Amino acid sequence: MGTWLKHDVITIVNAPLDNVWNTWSDLDSMSLWMSWIESVKTIDQETSTLPDLTEWTLAANGFKFKWKAQITERIEKNKLKWKSIGGLPTQGSVIFESKGDQLTSVHLAVTYELPRMIARFMEEKILGKMVTNELQANIDRFRDLVEKNYKNELTN
Image 1 (tube, rainbow, N blue to C red):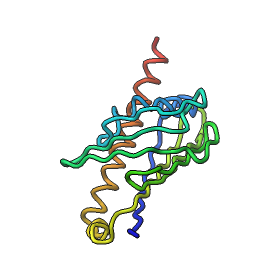
Image 2: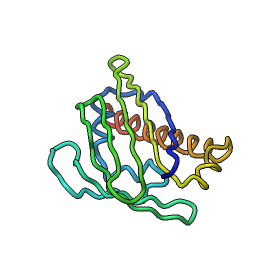
Image 3: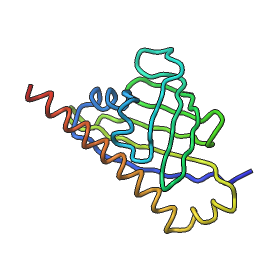
Image 4: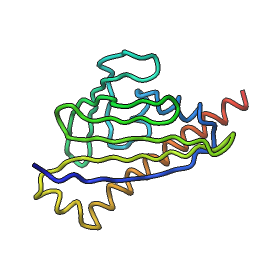
């Protein structure tokens, strides 16, 4: 048994909820804004908006991990929850909340299990904060991508 570590990040996107949801739903583009994600591959396409089963490849600092993720809860344009199946033990959620016609809040929570010896170092302020900071940078890149696409949509 390892230790579960959790990181929460939030961003506000200057775009309507539909645009934010649709960009998040494009799993192929996740590697554009998630720096540690090398690829996301759909394994099972049961729905038209998001697949229920995907294979993720994380590559960071010389480490490479693969795992499958299963969507465990989907509330359209509101919430997604997932957990890994084999590979790197992870689970998480993303919650979308409209803050008006043009603003959407995105709250990402990522939890993962590490062996206790490694987790000890991650819990300390430096390494744990580094992961949180990287997740925040990722979700901010997501925000920037959505806002850029939305702005282009308005001008075309």
